[in-house]
Length: 140
Image (cartoon, rainbow, N blue to C red; front, side):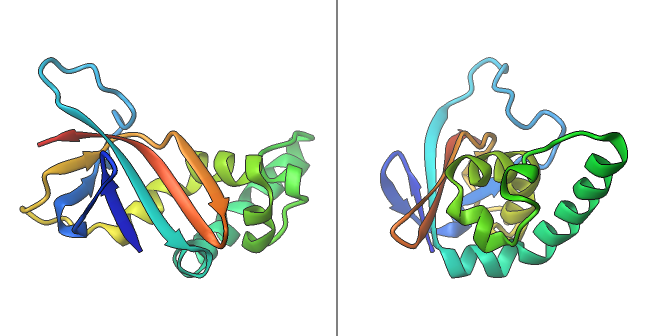
């Protein structure tokens, strides 16, 4: 697993994430904003999110069936997390909508040394066995 701020590799202890309702908002004066990338293997991604993915997928499937609706999960026929990874659009949509902050909660210990606060998830992709998640941070 590797973590980058503005294309420079950084230690995980320098990162935390915004678990609040204002995740994704950067409307505060004086914020210093940086770009981040998290790079992890598909196996690391699966190990962290699979249980939560299955729980959310099953819940959304029941909702979709009872409301006669479709969701991000229906694109991959409510398949496994491996199937999710194989679908570019579903991987991005499901991760951004349901999994990103769960994943961040597992990856980033809440420590005083954190300088960068992840505050958005803008892109998720699978390339050559790696999952890359990117977005923007603000500095504490």
